[in-house]
Amino acid sequence: MTGSRIVSLGHYQPSRVVTNTDLSGVIDTNDAWIRDRVGIAERRVAENESVADMATFAAEKALANAGLTAADIDSVFVATCSSEDRCPNVATRVAARLGIHAPGAVDLNTACSGFCYGLAMADHAIRAGASRNALVIGSEKLSDITDWTDRRTSIIFADGAGAAVVSADDDPNGIGPVVWGSAPEKGDAILIEGWRPVIWQEGQAVFRWATTALAQHARLACERAGVATSDLGAFVAHQANARIIDGIAKRLNLGPDTVIAKDIEVSGNTSAASVPLALSKLVETRAVPSGAPVLLFGFGGGLTYAGQVVRCP
Image 1 (tube, rainbow, N blue to C red):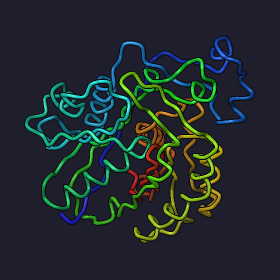
Image 2 (image 1 turned 180 degrees about the horizontal axis):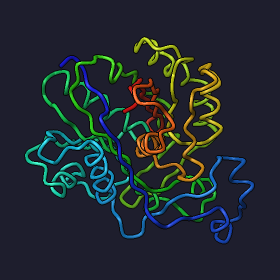
Image 3 (image 1 turned 60 degrees about the vertical axis):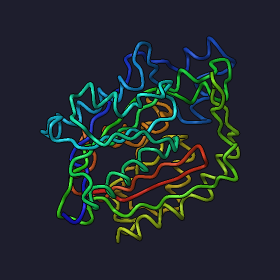
Image 4 (image 1 turned 120 degrees about the horizontal axis):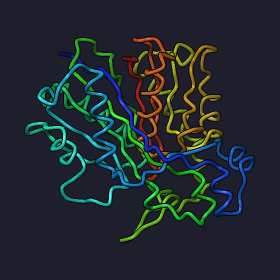
């Protein structure tokens, strides 16, 4: 096999919905202010589910959609920055629950770009012959590390998980070359530090960086895949802020029919889970044709970024 491809996707969100009106009863805010500032109407918050629970639920759906079983999987990559469990890692917990035998099992933390990093790692492992069928999962329980009295952050973050089955394939363009990198000198713009941490971010600094520095890297991912931005079937960015998504999309000169994922409106910012969660919903609703080129682009804490063009399952 000369490449890999996303065979299927699955996602999971907790049942509890927290609306902007709900938040206005706790902090000084309102629905119109939140929608205008970040583009969010509601978000999901986990009550009894852990990061590993949500990752497992999303992975089960991805496996079912692929028509594969645990016996077919030989590697598991989990992207998360919010798991309170450090050892065993989330990947081995998921593997144990699914009954996957002796997989390579890796957790990675590049915050909101984590799924795209994990997808690249799975693609590289498959191309190198170290894996044949991989699970790549983004799962976050950000509600555990959110200060619900801070209106700068409590309006943004949420919980959920998304998963992809990635398999060896004859098509070298099923998952295109990754463009990844970071701006570590700006890393203190988003912090989750200490033993009992809460998320803190310098929102304006992140906004300026995301809207001015990232489009060139997203465009490069398309160039490396040999796909014009105007020919993309969809653009699925990290669901950080609706204005950031619009700002990057505008600079990419997308085609009139390109679908721009805006799952943030009903899901909030789910960090490493946001890209697979949004992509899974587009596939589930058949909003993007199978085989269409889709640009995935994650960015966030670190400050890190990663993106690649994939063929829609």
